[in-house]
Length: 116
Length: 115
Image 1 (tube, rainbow over the protein chains, first blue to last red):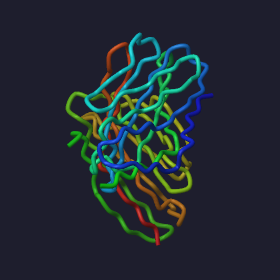
Image 2: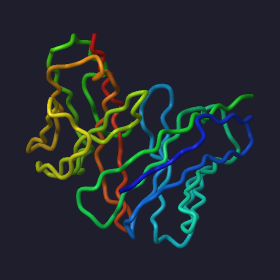
Image 3: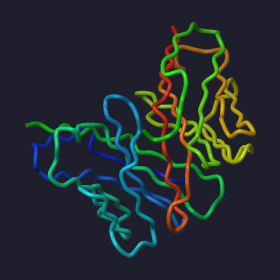
Image 4: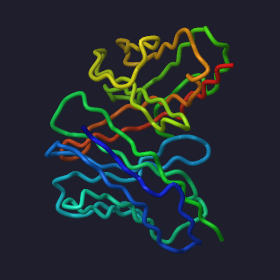
């Protein structure tokens, strides 16, 4: 069975600071993908970043980077230079890659609040 | 804009009724996923279709059903509605990423309120 755990219900940060959102996972699939999505108050789900389990380097997308530690089964999202518009709910998600028909499963999410 | 279109954006109905939620995937995407988001359960996977065929099933109730049509749009049918079915229902379509990863693009959701 697959499981995603996000232990931080809420995080508070000031503008221009960096913030790390935690995510740990559990899976028996040898090959899997890890994702982060952002959900602002408007409700839409916005894809941020993807990390494959066999990728040698940590993924980066602009101000977002994924701190992937395979042995610890963690996939933390790092947002550098926070902006007010980063205030949103953030979801970590995972999908096994070896089986057809496995869906993306999500953690419970972390609410990030960025203040000026 | 993700390119995934969901209608309607809001739906208010009564218990016992039946509703249909519609989703048009991004052009070229063959997979459609349905998710339910509620405060207590979080984001729950309901069902996936790939090119018209059911591919995977999650926590979908028997009162719910879905289908994907030849033009690849999908509909989620919810019947005998209960108060607890009130939630945000997302549709997502997918494209294969590098190394076999699959990036899901989500629609803006349909907010269902059952009164």
